[in-house]
Picture 1: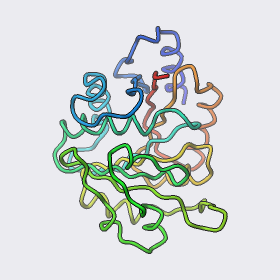
Picture 2 (picture 1 turned 135 degrees about the vertical axis):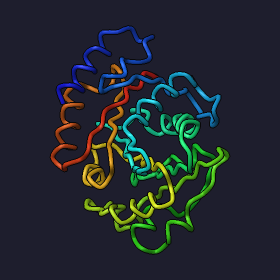
Picture 3 (picture 1 turned 135 degrees about the horizontal axis):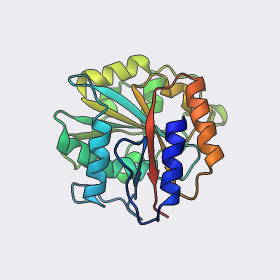
Length: 238
Protein backbone atom coordinates (compact mmCIF):
# COMPACT_ATOMS: atom_id res chain seq x y z
CA UNK A 1 0.00 0.00 0.00
CA UNK A 2 2.76 2.45 0.91
CA UNK A 3 4.44 1.98 -2.49
CA UNK A 4 1.21 2.79 -4.30
CA UNK A 5 0.50 5.87 -2.19
CA UNK A 6 4.03 7.16 -2.62
CA UNK A 7 3.60 6.87 -6.37
CA UNK A 8 0.31 8.77 -6.14
CA UNK A 9 2.00 11.50 -4.12
CA UNK A 10 4.67 11.93 -6.78
CA UNK A 11 2.02 12.07 -9.51
CA UNK A 12 0.01 14.70 -7.66
CA UNK A 13 3.14 16.85 -7.34
CA UNK A 14 3.69 16.88 -11.08
CA UNK A 15 2.06 19.03 -13.70
CA UNK A 16 -1.20 17.78 -15.19
CA UNK A 17 0.69 17.62 -18.48
CA UNK A 18 2.81 14.72 -17.23
CA UNK A 19 1.39 11.51 -18.62
CA UNK A 20 3.48 8.79 -17.02
CA UNK A 21 5.48 7.71 -14.00
CA UNK A 22 8.67 5.73 -13.80
CA UNK A 23 8.07 2.12 -14.81
CA UNK A 24 9.35 0.91 -11.44
CA UNK A 25 6.51 2.67 -9.63
CA UNK A 26 3.16 1.13 -8.79
CA UNK A 27 1.14 3.73 -10.73
CA UNK A 28 1.09 4.92 -14.31
CA UNK A 29 -0.77 7.99 -15.52
CA UNK A 30 -2.84 7.89 -18.68
CA UNK A 31 -5.34 10.25 -20.30
CA UNK A 32 -8.36 8.51 -21.84
CA UNK A 33 -9.78 10.17 -24.95
CA UNK A 34 -12.68 12.58 -24.38
CA UNK A 35 -16.14 11.93 -25.79
CA UNK A 36 -16.90 8.83 -27.90
CA UNK A 37 -14.07 6.34 -27.71
CA UNK A 38 -12.37 5.61 -31.06
CA UNK A 39 -11.36 1.99 -31.56
CA UNK A 40 -8.14 0.88 -33.23
CA UNK A 41 -4.36 1.14 -33.02
CA UNK A 42 -4.40 4.87 -33.87
CA UNK A 43 -6.91 5.84 -31.20
CA UNK A 44 -6.00 8.35 -28.47
CA UNK A 45 -2.34 8.61 -27.51
CA UNK A 46 -0.78 5.45 -28.97
CA UNK A 47 2.53 5.99 -27.20
CA UNK A 48 0.99 6.40 -23.76
CA UNK A 49 -1.23 3.34 -24.14
CA UNK A 50 1.70 1.40 -25.55
CA UNK A 51 3.80 2.16 -22.48
CA UNK A 52 0.94 1.19 -20.20
CA UNK A 53 0.47 -2.06 -22.14
CA UNK A 54 4.19 -2.84 -21.79
CA UNK A 55 4.02 -2.28 -18.04
CA UNK A 56 0.98 -4.50 -17.62
CA UNK A 57 2.37 -7.26 -19.79
CA UNK A 58 5.59 -7.29 -17.76
CA UNK A 59 3.46 -8.85 -15.01
CA UNK A 60 2.07 -11.54 -17.29
CA UNK A 61 3.76 -14.90 -16.79
CA UNK A 62 5.05 -16.54 -19.95
CA UNK A 63 2.68 -19.15 -21.36
CA UNK A 64 0.18 -18.50 -18.56
CA UNK A 65 -3.10 -16.80 -19.47
CA UNK A 66 -4.42 -14.27 -16.97
CA UNK A 67 -7.66 -12.60 -15.96
CA UNK A 68 -7.25 -9.05 -14.62
CA UNK A 69 -9.98 -6.92 -13.11
CA UNK A 70 -10.04 -3.13 -13.44
CA UNK A 71 -11.96 -1.32 -10.73
CA UNK A 72 -11.91 2.05 -8.97
CA UNK A 73 -12.59 3.56 -5.54
CA UNK A 74 -15.69 5.35 -6.88
CA UNK A 75 -17.60 6.00 -10.07
CA UNK A 76 -16.32 8.22 -12.86
CA UNK A 77 -12.64 7.23 -12.93
CA UNK A 78 -12.61 6.40 -16.66
CA UNK A 79 -12.12 2.63 -16.46
CA UNK A 80 -14.25 1.67 -19.42
CA UNK A 81 -12.83 4.12 -21.96
CA UNK A 82 -9.35 3.26 -20.68
CA UNK A 83 -9.84 -0.44 -21.44
CA UNK A 84 -11.31 0.19 -24.89
CA UNK A 85 -8.25 2.25 -25.89
CA UNK A 86 -5.78 -0.03 -24.11
CA UNK A 87 -6.95 -3.26 -25.76
CA UNK A 88 -5.43 -2.60 -29.23
CA UNK A 89 -2.06 -1.80 -27.64
CA UNK A 90 -2.15 -5.08 -25.73
CA UNK A 91 -3.05 -7.02 -28.87
CA UNK A 92 -0.12 -5.49 -30.77
CA UNK A 93 2.21 -6.93 -28.16
CA UNK A 94 0.68 -10.37 -27.56
CA UNK A 95 -0.34 -13.40 -29.52
CA UNK A 96 -3.71 -15.06 -29.26
CA UNK A 97 -7.06 -13.48 -28.58
CA UNK A 98 -8.12 -10.97 -25.95
CA UNK A 99 -11.49 -11.00 -24.19
CA UNK A 100 -13.03 -7.95 -22.59
CA UNK A 101 -15.73 -8.79 -20.05
CA UNK A 102 -18.25 -6.19 -18.95
CA UNK A 103 -18.46 -7.17 -15.29
CA UNK A 104 -20.19 -3.94 -14.33
CA UNK A 105 -23.51 -5.32 -13.15
CA UNK A 106 -24.73 -1.83 -12.22
CA UNK A 107 -24.13 0.25 -15.34
CA UNK A 108 -22.79 -1.89 -18.20
CA UNK A 109 -21.37 0.26 -21.01
CA UNK A 110 -18.35 -1.57 -22.39
CA UNK A 111 -19.99 -3.40 -25.28
CA UNK A 112 -21.76 -0.25 -26.44
CA UNK A 113 -18.47 1.64 -26.64
CA UNK A 114 -17.16 -1.15 -28.85
CA UNK A 115 -20.16 -0.92 -31.14
CA UNK A 116 -21.70 -4.17 -29.90
CA UNK A 117 -25.38 -4.34 -28.94
CA UNK A 118 -26.81 -7.19 -26.88
CA UNK A 119 -29.74 -7.77 -24.57
CA UNK A 120 -28.01 -10.64 -22.77
CA UNK A 121 -24.63 -10.80 -21.09
CA UNK A 122 -22.64 -11.74 -18.01
CA UNK A 123 -25.62 -11.65 -15.65
CA UNK A 124 -27.41 -14.32 -17.69
CA UNK A 125 -24.24 -16.43 -17.71
CA UNK A 126 -23.90 -16.19 -13.93
CA UNK A 127 -27.55 -17.12 -13.50
CA UNK A 128 -26.99 -20.22 -15.63
CA UNK A 129 -29.52 -19.30 -18.32
CA UNK A 130 -27.05 -18.81 -21.18
CA UNK A 131 -23.65 -20.31 -22.10
CA UNK A 132 -20.99 -17.61 -22.21
CA UNK A 133 -19.68 -18.71 -25.60
CA UNK A 134 -23.09 -17.95 -27.12
CA UNK A 135 -22.94 -14.38 -25.86
CA UNK A 136 -19.35 -13.41 -26.74
CA UNK A 137 -19.19 -11.04 -29.70
CA UNK A 138 -16.37 -10.17 -32.07
CA UNK A 139 -15.46 -6.50 -32.37
CA UNK A 140 -14.08 -4.48 -35.27
CA UNK A 141 -10.61 -4.92 -33.76
CA UNK A 142 -9.01 -8.14 -34.94
CA UNK A 143 -8.60 -10.76 -32.17
CA UNK A 144 -10.65 -8.68 -29.71
CA UNK A 145 -13.94 -10.06 -28.40
CA UNK A 146 -16.33 -8.80 -25.74
CA UNK A 147 -18.75 -10.46 -23.37
CA UNK A 148 -21.43 -7.80 -22.87
CA UNK A 149 -22.75 -6.84 -19.48
CA UNK A 150 -26.32 -6.73 -18.24
CA UNK A 151 -27.97 -5.91 -14.95
CA UNK A 152 -29.29 -8.75 -12.82
CA UNK A 153 -33.02 -9.09 -13.60
CA UNK A 154 -33.90 -9.72 -9.97
CA UNK A 155 -36.49 -8.14 -7.72
CA UNK A 156 -35.52 -4.55 -7.13
CA UNK A 157 -32.52 -4.98 -9.40
CA UNK A 158 -30.43 -6.24 -6.50
CA UNK A 159 -27.06 -7.71 -7.38
CA UNK A 160 -25.83 -10.81 -5.51
CA UNK A 161 -22.94 -9.88 -3.23
CA UNK A 162 -21.13 -13.20 -3.52
CA UNK A 163 -20.28 -14.30 -7.04
CA UNK A 164 -17.91 -17.22 -7.50
CA UNK A 165 -16.20 -16.38 -10.78
CA UNK A 166 -13.45 -18.98 -10.47
CA UNK A 167 -14.91 -21.68 -12.78
CA UNK A 168 -15.97 -19.12 -15.38
CA UNK A 169 -12.58 -17.38 -15.41
CA UNK A 170 -10.84 -20.71 -15.91
CA UNK A 171 -13.04 -21.37 -18.93
CA UNK A 172 -12.22 -17.94 -20.32
CA UNK A 173 -8.49 -18.54 -19.89
CA UNK A 174 -8.69 -21.89 -21.66
CA UNK A 175 -9.49 -19.96 -24.85
CA UNK A 176 -8.04 -16.48 -24.36
CA UNK A 177 -4.49 -15.38 -23.59
CA UNK A 178 -5.69 -12.37 -21.65
CA UNK A 179 -9.05 -11.57 -20.09
CA UNK A 180 -9.81 -8.05 -18.83
CA UNK A 181 -12.81 -7.47 -16.58
CA UNK A 182 -14.36 -4.01 -16.43
CA UNK A 183 -16.13 -4.05 -13.06
CA UNK A 184 -18.19 -1.49 -11.22
CA UNK A 185 -16.43 0.58 -8.57
CA UNK A 186 -15.62 -0.66 -5.10
CA UNK A 187 -18.51 1.45 -3.84
CA UNK A 188 -20.67 -1.61 -4.58
CA UNK A 189 -20.44 -4.64 -2.28
CA UNK A 190 -20.24 -7.33 -4.96
CA UNK A 191 -17.07 -5.95 -6.59
CA UNK A 192 -14.33 -6.71 -4.05
CA UNK A 193 -15.37 -10.39 -3.66
CA UNK A 194 -15.24 -10.76 -7.47
CA UNK A 195 -11.62 -9.64 -7.48
CA UNK A 196 -10.37 -12.49 -5.34
CA UNK A 197 -10.94 -14.92 -8.22
CA UNK A 198 -8.82 -12.88 -10.66
CA UNK A 199 -5.09 -13.18 -11.30
CA UNK A 200 -4.65 -9.47 -10.69
CA UNK A 201 -6.49 -6.26 -9.88
CA UNK A 202 -5.69 -2.79 -11.18
CA UNK A 203 -7.11 0.21 -9.38
CA UNK A 204 -8.08 3.10 -11.68
CA UNK A 205 -8.14 6.54 -10.04
CA UNK A 206 -8.70 10.00 -11.47
CA UNK A 207 -6.15 12.70 -10.77
CA UNK A 208 -7.51 15.56 -8.60
CA UNK A 209 -10.87 13.83 -8.31
CA UNK A 210 -10.34 10.60 -6.40
CA UNK A 211 -9.61 11.57 -2.78
CA UNK A 212 -6.60 10.02 -1.08
CA UNK A 213 -8.81 8.55 1.62
CA UNK A 214 -10.79 6.87 -1.15
CA UNK A 215 -7.64 5.22 -2.46
CA UNK A 216 -6.69 4.06 1.04
CA UNK A 217 -10.12 2.60 1.62
CA UNK A 218 -10.12 0.88 -1.77
CA UNK A 219 -6.76 -0.77 -1.08
CA UNK A 220 -7.98 -1.88 2.35
CA UNK A 221 -11.14 -3.40 0.91
CA UNK A 222 -9.21 -5.29 -1.77
CA UNK A 223 -6.77 -6.63 0.80
CA UNK A 224 -9.61 -7.64 3.15
CA UNK A 225 -10.93 -9.92 0.41
CA UNK A 226 -7.42 -11.19 -0.40
CA UNK A 227 -7.49 -9.63 -3.83
CA UNK A 228 -4.21 -9.71 -5.81
CA UNK A 229 -3.66 -5.96 -6.23
CA UNK A 230 -0.99 -5.37 -8.90
CA UNK A 231 -0.98 -1.58 -9.17
CA UNK A 232 -2.99 1.40 -10.31
CA UNK A 233 -3.59 3.57 -13.33
CA UNK A 234 -4.15 7.28 -12.82
CA UNK A 235 -6.39 8.90 -15.43
CA UNK A 236 -6.01 12.61 -16.08
CA UNK A 237 -8.94 13.33 -18.40
CA UNK A 238 -11.58 15.76 -17.24
